[in-house]
Image 1 (cartoon, rainbow, N blue to C red):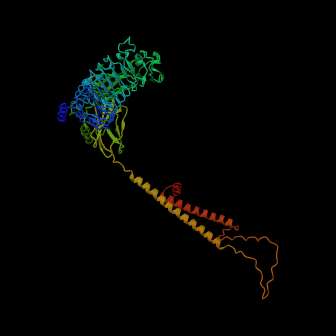
Image 2 (cartoon, helix red, strand yellow):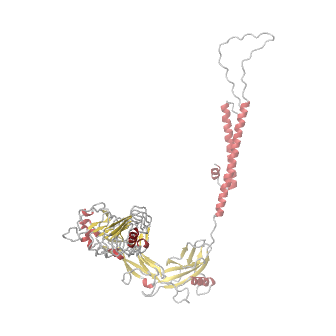
Image 3 (cartoon, rainbow, N blue to C red):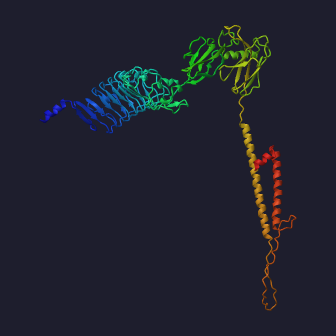
Length: 636
């Protein structure tokens, strides 16, 4: 009977349960339980007929298409609390019957557009507790019509696929709490008629745009599907933009205001509606007038204050809104940049600042100066380049052309990095609007422009390249005769000059260092000599004093010839004789005691030191050319 039973088991196609897992066959559905088994990957021998697969609390790091291949009957897949960092493309491609997918508590950083492709009937998707910073816009496209619960809480999301979320008609629960979301697109929840819970707790929302979804109250009689809305823990800015939300009257919630300072810390629902106010825009500073040369970059600035922060717009001279293009860029902070200006860009621009409380405008005038074409008549209407400047400078230097014999433009006081450009007053009959200096160097062929007022007759060029040759031309700009005429230009003269080479500073520094070192060395030798001389004097004086100490005599009795010396008589005790005075070996005119000797020796040493020090000072002044005070400081 054994062989037929074995054949029957093989024919039934029953697969063995994975070794570390527990398999349960209940009500014709197979459940494979592999939680808490220390798995590093999905077991490859899982029965493909499994309906429920639990792989939670393991150490699985990655998922791929082979892990769930041919598991078309799988309904519930739990992968919670693993170490999953990557989900391969179409890893769930064969799970067409999947209803619930738990991926919470993993280490996912990003979901691509094909990471969740396959489960077209998915109803519950749990992605909380990961490290998600980005979800691709098309990540939820395969189950938009079937998804009922979406949980992406406790991640690092600043943006979510709003377009996909707004297209989920069956969505009941949406958890977006504990992320970094700072703005919600207006009307993003308008189509979610079945949504009953929306959790926006602990994000970075300062305001909420009006949405029909939020108008659904909690009273079941007023709304067939009441909404449970949570948005506490956000830095709400309680101004007029949130007045619509305040009027919903939700007294049982604990949301608080973070700003403005007068309302910070107060309960949102306890603030009176009259305190939800805004401030109209006020343009604090802006560019009033800007002149640029044709072809240069023009930057128009406009700064506005208000509550909420105003939105900035620019209107061009043609009364059209200026938008971003290949030539112009309008930034949110109110700055307008025109990359390459032309004659058509000149005119009056209007800066407009708007917010819900009103608007403010400011006028900015832009004038584009046409490039001068008088330096090279062979180039018709062309922009002068470096070669034009060089040719004009050589012509002026050689005396060729229409310029006077005496150069009208001179460059004097040339240093390594600067030069003074001077020119004459010119003909009084020719009105001059302003002067323009054009120059370039042999190191850099870039043409540099400088605009000088008409009242000036000289200009100091700075930041030049040391040891370079420069070609310079001066032009006079006259005002246009009519509004449509170009600015008239007239060449006054050109000049050629060369900057001095860079002066090395090491020679002066070396001389200074050597002089200081020599002073210190000589001073050290002299000080050492003085110290040796002082020690010698002290030793000599002490030796002479010890050699002349007087002898101390004892009591002497007379001696008789052959007789016995008589016994000394007892005498009453007498006081010791006075101690003879100590003689001093060095007599300088003072006959005092030893203390006089020390005083005389100190005076002699002071006189000798002064004489030596004075000679040192005199030698220092004569040899080093410095003051005695400086030398004394060096020696000491």
